[in-house]
Length: 210
Ligand code: 5GP
Image 1: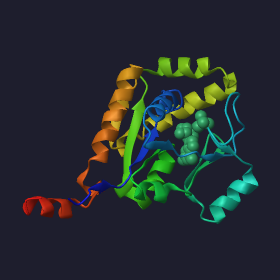
Image 2 (image 1 turned 30 degrees about the vertical axis):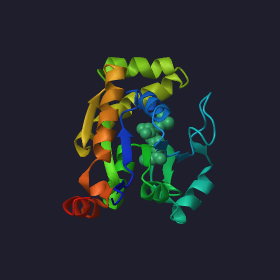
Image 3 (image 1 turned 45 degrees about the horizontal axis):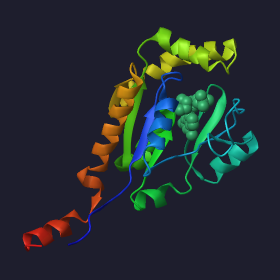
C-alpha cells in the first residue's frame, strides 16, 4: 500500500497579552512531540526567567533590521514599541517533514502570513473571559511595571478588534477546556484533505483490492 503522509500545520495563536496564550502554548508543546514553537526574535529586554533562545532570541535593533533586509523573516511587526519577528529558518523543512510549528504572534504578523502561507495556516484567536480578568493576569505576571500594564491594557482593546480575521475563536475561561479545544483544532487541521499527500495513490491501491 502507498503511504499517506501529511504536510505540517502552521498553527497560529494570537490574543491580547494576558489572555493565557503563553500558558496554553507551553502546555500544548509539552504534550505533543510533533509540535514545535517558532522562537521569535525581539528587541524587547528579557523578563526575569526568560531564556535567550528558548522564549525569544533577544537581539538589538541593528541586527533586527539586518534580518528584515536580508529577507530572513517570515513576518515582523512592532508591538508595544518593540520589534518582533519570525525567523524563516527551518519552518519549510518541518512542514515538508510532516511536523507542525506553533506561532505565538500578534494580528499584524498573522495578516502577513495569511498573504504568504494561507494554505499552511490554522489561526486561533484566544479571548479572555473578561477585561477584569485580563488586567488581573497582567498584574500577577508582576514582571512588568504599572506603566507597562496600563499600556498593554490600552492596547488590548485594539487587539480584540481583530478576532474576525481568525479561523477559530477559543474563550479561555477554563484553562483545561481551552487547551483541549486548541488540541482538537490541531487534530482536525492535521487531517485536512489538502494536507494529506499520497491519498490518490492510496485510494488507487484500495480500488485495486490492496
Ligand atoms: P510579549 O512582549 O508579551 O512577549 O509579546 C507581546 C506580543 O508580541 C504578543 O502578542 C506576542 O504574541 C507578539 N509576538 C511575539 N513574537 C512575535 C513575532 O515574532 N511576530 C509578531 N508579529 N508578534 C509577535
